[in-house]
Amino acid sequence: MWDKTIGAVMLIGAAVALAPIAHADDDADYVNNLKQHGVSPSPGTSESQWEAGAIKAAHDICGMAAAGYSRDSITARYTSRNPDSRDTVKVTVDAAVATYCPRYW
Image (cartoon, rainbow, N blue to C red; front, top):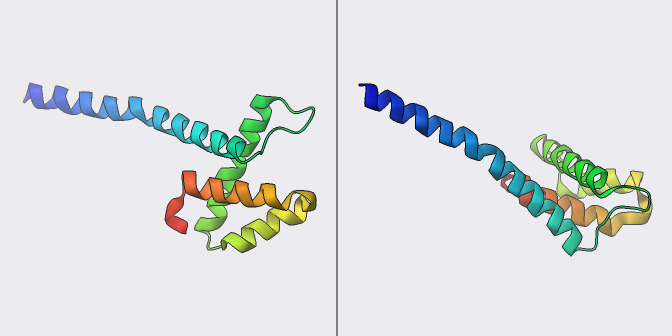
């Protein structure tokens, strides 16, 4: 009995310990995807601020996708706020869904 309990605790501990690593990998993959497509911080924005904002936007995008918004409607919503960066918005939306919530399309 004791061995089974210890084994279960170790298994749960390993799963919990590895969860943040998987999330960190998703964040790094997402940021790298953006950079590979030419998306980078605007002048005056630090790398860490840009990454945090980009990751937050990705989670917001997935929330919208989960709520039933289409790729086009999400892109249109972000483009209306940033009309000069339609290509950047498209890359951001596609990278967000591919990395964090591919089940939505």
